[in-house]
Length: 393
Image (cartoon, rainbow, N blue to C red; front, top):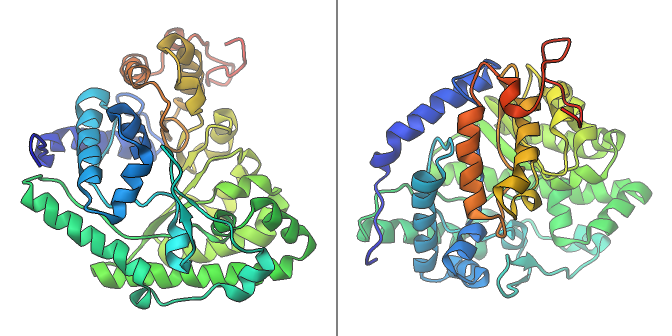
């Protein structure tokens, strides 16, 4: 591809320094400065490069040239302009949030300039009866995703790009998987009114998760011992409901694939589950969504769960001056004692101001150094040695 180049070797020292910093923080110790983890989505890069997001996602099943260009240009921007603490990099066929559609052969719509979504075609009772558990090795749409990975790998080599090509497919855990192709309100109502019916669906979705993960391990010759789950819809059930109806399925996944690591992403607000995540699920790491409060996470996770996030994309749409108070508060609360990385909750979406994001990263590198200096963050040390988290701090 003319004019496009990338060599991962150039960034190895940068990634190794970030890896050491994050490892110290994961041990609930204080490194030289707070790590910075920005999970920048490819939709963000499409907006920045003037690419229609719909065209980008359609190319996942096309010739892949547009996906390769956007992702390579994005990686170069991340390393050379943003400069956060990423410890690895690669590209892959990016299908968007439609994993369940691929596994269960459901229709997908591609709206203009936004991510694709699964078309709702059935009710929950219909899904219990109609969803078919197709073995991945016999599922044409699953196999197409893996074939596109091989196609991308061949193209990357032909173009002389020195970058790993990732791949694979993972559906959400049962609750969020169900809410991905059914109306979430319907799922929640049935969870209260007819939980046994919902559990019939959840059991089918859990089996599909296992089948897909085991197929992927066979395909790549690997054994999954550390796994991350995205369970956004848990925010909308009480902790009692979560423990009774949702957590058992997630725990089965973690028990099978999370021997060495249990990560969770949830857009939130998931604050009411934080104690359960830390003490029962026993997560090793979590990125909390921008609708959760970092103060609640710090109290529950201190010494137990390495976490980042808790900042909302909407607070980064404008200039640095607008973002700064949110940044300062996150650092005041999260930094003491390690166990924390600075980052926007979940994915950095299209609409976030690229210049603001770069300025924020530069600022955090300057003021987010250990030992913590409260004066740099507009706060003061509390009676127990932690920074004040009051609104006036």
